Amino acid sequence: MKIVKLMATITIFFIFIPANAQITLSDADIEKYLSTLPKLQTLIASPDPEDNPMESRDLSSQNENLTSRTPISDNLERMKNHPTYDMFSRIVNDAGFETPADWAAVGDEIMMAYSAYLIKNPVDNNAPTLDEMKKDLAEQLSKVEGNQFITLENKELLINKIENSIAMLNDPTYITNKNIPIIRPYIGRLTSYLRNTNDTY
Image (cartoon, rainbow, N blue to C red):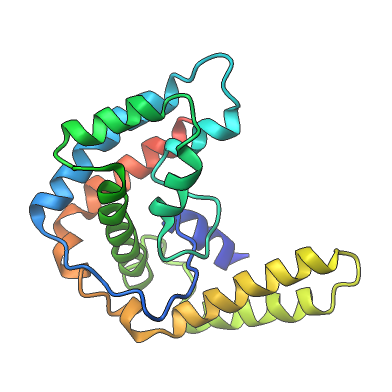
């Protein structure tokens, strides 16, 4: 589906949290965050042989849960028990962040603005429009609701994710994210870093 491809490209999951206020990014914040990505990519690409491969992926700036407004912070919780967490903490501290949580908060805002930018300025001419994305999600929701071959727990989880994604796309503060103009000069670097991170898997 086109919607799945686009979601994979923007690497975000959007859990709808109405009270989640946007933080205005600064150039300094963005530069600090971007400075950590090459080092984190190296950390991801060189896992300990005993590491769980799936766990090492949590150190990336990406998340397999495409329905969160806080994709980086969500990963941070899972990263805390990862064997390379101390190394990760040193990297973000050396970049000028007081705590990993501060780093993740900046990352959340960057990724939210980046994903909204890509929806408004798709790199693929065949990318679905916002209305097409909403229609596709509505169709997915209908299929899941009528699926008799998945457990009730999984069905509720999928329904929740799809409904949250629809709510996200309907939220005007997302698609008109105030940080979009601020990250615009960094789009090329972000795209390059995220592509390289994908290539480490």
